[in-house]
Length: 123
Image (cartoon, rainbow, N blue to C red; front, side, top):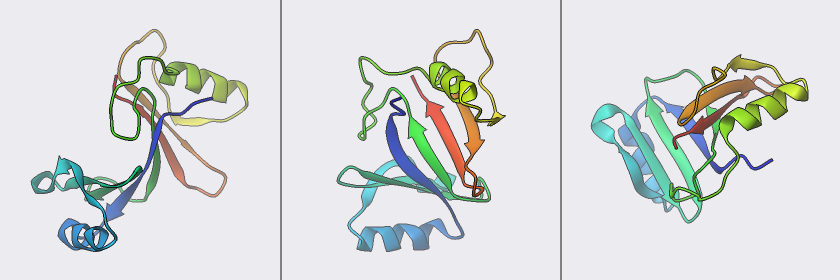
């Protein structure tokens, strides 16, 4: 199973302070708008999303259909197929993708320790 590009989405208290911190670690702004309280920071192939006031906890994020630079892949596993396979393995979703849809879609699950995992397909 190929889940796509990986990043961690962090719920931050002050996006300006967090941006400065991650820049000191060598990250640069890759995407997002600080005025809208979100940035995607990149260091090599590593991505960290900074989100102020958008959600409570941190989220492990996978993007089917994208490489680590958010370039669309020609071939990838659709999020609906990933969801179906995970459900067949007994993993429960906290938010499902509606069946019979196509294109962009997302679903959430939680690991045994309460960590949120988002499968977020943009293509």
